[in-house]
Length: 340
Ligand code: KG4
Ligand code: ZN
Image 1: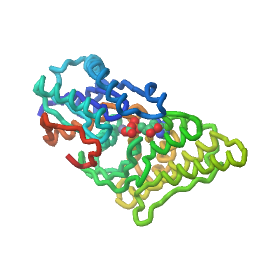
Image 2 (image 1 turned 90 degrees about the vertical axis):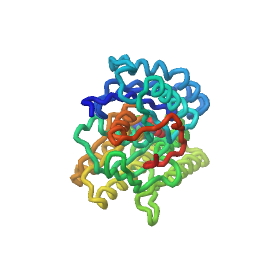
Image 3 (image 1 turned 45 degrees about the horizontal axis):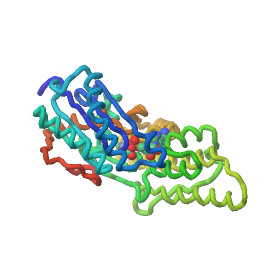
Image 4 (image 1 turned 120 degrees about the horizontal axis):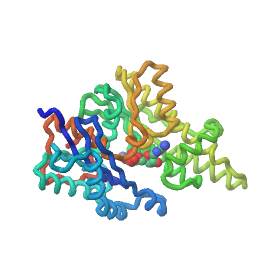
């Protein structure tokens, strides 16, 4: 085995065109992200067709910048990795086609990576000591999963959302209270000026499935509250609504994660995905872990939201296991975690 495995990783599953060079899974030499957020903000959410077109426009520049920043060329690489699902199919296809072209042109091994596996693996980049087994809470715009990471690339999904993902709930509530897209960071900011106990919103638990989540009832409760205020001709306090909603999400996520760690006998908990950059969630998880003597791991905010460094981290462990994809690799929009 070579001492250094240099992987070029590509991520284009949603509205970020991203490329990174990662050495041995944890040493990030470059992490370039071209965000399309401004473009989609006008429409109040991601427009898949526009996302695909922008990926096509940007991807070669983003990859070149990732190589330049890492002081490498395609000739220095040992493999090329790409997110092949889940995500928006047209968006995924851009990255997959690009990675296949590089793999073919340079005769490099091709490694397809699951997007959620990437999010989880973001934790390895700054926590050099983190190794499986551990529990990971993955909360993003498209997913809310409570996962037991038994080994590298080995996952057992303990719980998942029954309806909206946590990030989706943030985005929808933000729109309802006039904060716009993307909602998560805006609710995070406004909540700092609000009272998290001002309004009592529901915390949903699902009978017989204690690890599952449901956020649609909470979202409806916020909408009902806003409607009632309107009907009574009363104004509402935007910061209080945001903070109370955020607290309800944070309480549920923290409690479910605590239960999962306790009941599986794990000693380590990690968080991942865009919502993992939420300041209230990070603080609540830290406090809960401290109280329960659990080692807590979390990526920097830039590694929580979509990026390619996390794909390079996940790809390295797949590479070590001998996972290689052929030039028939396709985008799989609803790829399940643990599937190949
Ligand atoms: O992981 P990600 O970049 O993309 C997906 O794979 O979905 O997550 C994006 C989601 C969005 O819903 C966004 O509102 C949410 O993460 N998000 C946040 C914060 N930053 C991003 N939610 C709460 N607080 C934040 N600070
Ligand atoms: Zn993501």
